[in-house]
Length: 154
Image (tube, rainbow, N blue to C red; front, top):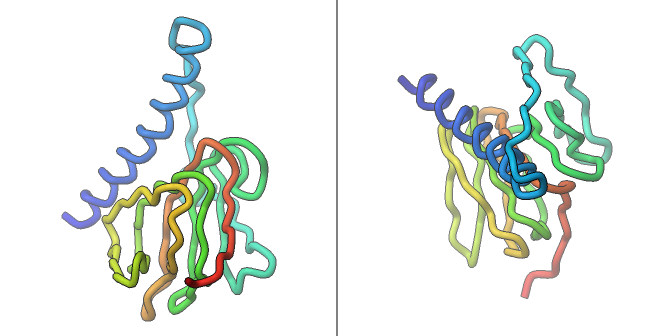
């Protein structure tokens, strides 16, 4: 049942990303453009470690999480890895597929176990990371590039 719920959340997140892309195309042309098939069985994902991140790995499925423009990507966040206090300049939708990811917002910690979804608003300072015990597998997507802007704690 947990796997089914996780799969449904993943499909919903992917649908949000592709439906917003189709909506943008429709606004510009007046009609919905045909979308190409995007297919990435787990065995076909190309993983790479992000330099200077302490072991964070990504597998892009659309665009590049480190490039310009829209992207969809799987992210493996090592168990026990914490981010510094930071923000993102655009909303960051995330589906947690494995492990327990967390965010600390206004001093309150929220745990997101596998099967969870959150959409972190742009410019919201927070801490985040993967709880100890099991690596976190995330699916993230944005309309433009990923960024992590460190901020000083007030």
